[in-house]
Length: 389
Image (cartoon, rainbow, N blue to C red):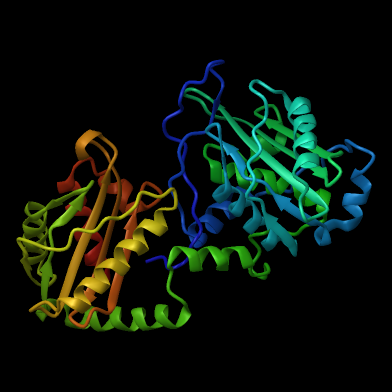
């Protein structure tokens, strides 16, 4: 189970723009641990040093990792997204930068703007909306229908709006070919890589990389437990592992889309009993949580887990443990491919024991390839088996 936070998303549906040129689709998520692991696998080799592009570039290079920089919301799917800017910020902090801010004011380049036009427009924007830092960075991730990432752009201007650095990576470029970006996470890695020689930065994925204040702040906003609670949960997991085969477990109706499904609770209980994992029963009624859709999947996961914990604390079950599962379906009316499978287990006191999530970044998810709620049940079984071994 991953108890870290940091969230990215895969490009899925590429919505058609008037000029048929697209920005990358919606954001799914990864936790920091998975993100850092994936980024490491993309970092073989060193980034090529960009060519000097403005008379102010040497000043930026001289400031290096001590430069104060505001990262504006990143262009993705035609929308400026602050959460993607936070991801870039985490990478740069881990690479050694200390004076970063995440901008809230959105910049949108003109339609069909090339890199030079985007840079000029960004300069005008910064002059009208001066940052508190010496520099401002805007990134834009572009794609084409059916082909995924086509282009990664980055522009830095100083607080006077003068262009300091601009960079465009496409399939013709060595760093693009090395990283092979297929999703926004990869684009963030590529952008950070291009900035490393400019700002004299280290590898953000090295073992001794500095801790990121932005990552810690995002974890707090997401609801991820602190280290003490993580340790307590691990201890409760070990107790569950030892007691599971003789313990009683009540399974509450599964949330499928926005619907509460007691049929899936009964199916899960049968699967658990047939596998000999625990002595499971299904509840015909249970909590119905209003979990807000969020680009940050971990936010949805921990909102669910905390709501379930509060419910059990207020309504102690007649069982040793209680389980609640949540499946997000991509199709209409919760029919179609499963986007994610979340579940939480509490003890009868309402203490969280297990909080687990699966999406298409995970081996178990890809082994089952869930396309229905019943497939989601089989994935929960597989994951729970792992906690019982």
